[in-house]
Figure (cartoon, rainbow, N blue to C red):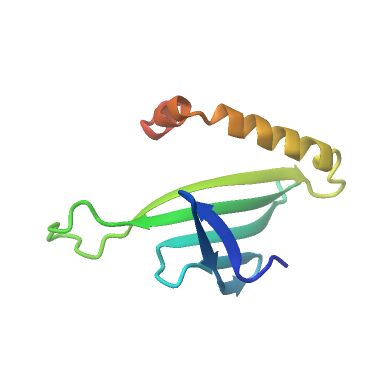
Length: 122
């Protein structure tokens, strides 16, 4: 089990996120004001024979259209996460491969690359 609370650094600030929910295979951590949230979950795919571990950090931001009379309660959220997929039975090479894959993905996510992803390029 992960520490409670989790500590996350965002824009040079240290944030404390206590666990607010533990359901099945998901833990949810959130700042007291609800602005930041971390979800840690695990799932399995019988079809592919893989297990997945996912970490997602979400930032809730002010609604840029507060005068939208059709949806005054709209929640605006930006999230970034990482998913680890591995063989459910053997977890072969995961301790070697996962750090290398994570490093490669983080290096790939430059500002220019992320701008293209956010713009919808595939």
